[in-house]
Length: 452
Image (cartoon, helix red, strand yellow):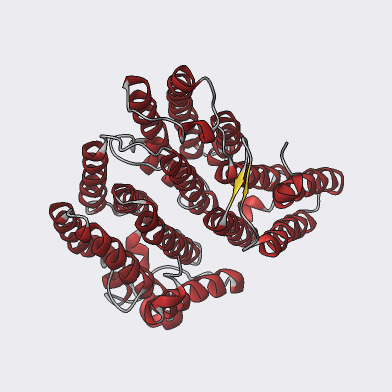
C-alpha cells in the first residue's frame, strides 16, 4: 500500500489547484488567481523540502529517493518562474487567466507524479495528465493562427507518441506479467520483447524531449505558443521525462544492446539542432532548435553507468532550466522580442539587460566561467572515461559551431541605435538578472552543482 504521506506535495498541489480554480472562477480576479497559484506551488515546494533527504521509499507504484526529490523541486521551481512570466503578459491577464493557471498547476502535478512513478501505468496516466494540459496551453491564444496551429500540431503528434508508449507497455507486460519497475529488476536475459519495449519507450519519450528525428513539432509550437508557455514547454517536460527515463533505465539491470541507438539519436539531435538554428531570425525558433541540441547532449548520459549517469545528467538539467528560463525572461522584456533584429542598440539603452543575455548565451554555448561550461565539461569527461571519444569529439565540434548562432543576438545588442521599445517589467528584469548571476556563480563554484 502506498504511504500517501510521501505524495503530500503532489496531493496538496492538486487540492490547492482545484480550490484556486473555483475561487478564481467565482471572483474572476486575475491578480488573486495568480497569487493563489503562486502560494499553491510555494506550499508544494516547502513540503518537498521538508521531505528532502529522508529515507528512500519504494512501493510497486511509487518510489522516492534523493534524485527524484531534487527533480520534483526543480519542476515546482519552474512553475513559480512561469507564474511570474505569465503575470507580466497582458494577454494572459484576462478572463481566461483562471483556466490558464489551473492547467499550469495540473501539468505540474502530472510531471511530479511522472518523476516518482514506479509503474508504467502510473507513468502513462501522469504523462497524459500534463500532456493534455500542455496541448491546451500551447494553443491558448485562440485568436492567433500561429497559436492554434501550435496547439493542434502538438496535440496530433503528441497523441501518436502516446500510442507508441502504450505499445512499449504492452511489450513489457507481455514479458513480465506486470507493469511495475520492480519486476524489471528480476529479468535475467534480454529478449525481443524487452528490447522492443525499450526502443518503443525511447521513441515515445524522444518526442517529449524533442530529440531528432522526433523533433519536427518543436519549432512551430515554440513559436506559436505564448512566450511564457514556450518557456514552460522547453524546460519542465524535459525534467519530468528525463527523470522517468532515468527511473526505467536504472530498474532494468540487463546490459541492453541499445548503445548504438543512443549514439545515433544523440548525434543526430546535436547536428539537426545546431545546424538548423543557424538560419533562424526568430529567437523562439532558435531556442527550439537549441533545445533539440541540448536534449542530444543530455541523452548521451544514458551511455554511462548509474552513478555517472546521475552526476552527469542531473546538474545539466538544473543548469539547462536556468539558462532557458532566463532567456525567455529576456525575450519578454523586449517589444516583439522574438525577432533578433529588434535587439539593435539594446546594449546601449539597457546595459544590465544586455549583460543578462550575454551571460545566458555564453552559458548555452558552454563558455567558461559559466555553469553551462561546467556541466558540459563534466558530461564529456565522464563519457571519455568510458571510451566514447569519437562521440565527445563530435559533441565538442557541435558546441563550437553553436557559438555562431548563440552570439548573433549579442552582436545585435551593440550594432546600431535602438529601434524598438524595452518593457520595464521589474519581475522579468529580476528573474533574468537572477538567472544570469546564478549561472556565473555556479560556474565559479561548481562543487555546489556537482553534489550527486
